[in-house]
Length: 214
View (tube, rainbow, N blue to C red):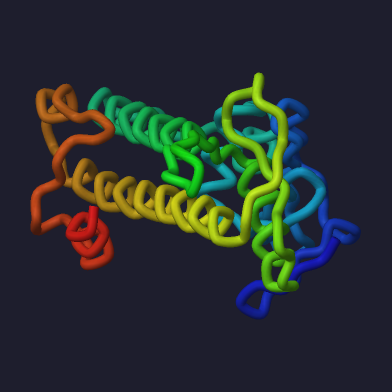
């Protein structure tokens, strides 16, 4: 599989497979030029920075991490706590996105999850909707409920709600990380949690816009 992103070619055939996560069906590759990318569910490619690749491998394959970058420098107690807190916030953000949202539809309210596989499949369904299909097959989060057809209008509501949900939380996390990284005392970190209020001066214009319509 190939993809060009910002002028860089990402090709699974010519890149080295660094790590395979069987549980989530994700593969981390390194290109011949030293760029990293993830192949999700054998269907889409997402570039990764070297720092995000380090973070990814550090949590999943320490031996491979050391092979590529060597042993990391020892951290101070505060830097270790900060790193652990950031990791916790990122995991909480991911879990929140995966949990999904309730969506009000023409025949009632249903809950929809948004894990990695959902995100990939919804992208494909959005493409199908442009082909003027009158009904789209999808499923609520409840595994005891069968798949069913949704009208284009309802499916549009589902996709818009889920994409808004994902983008908001990604935006919030980025601003929260920037804010938390300004801390210099361990006592400050103890009061940090996902969902906390971010001071106005650390909010991006994008986050302010999202909050204004929530």
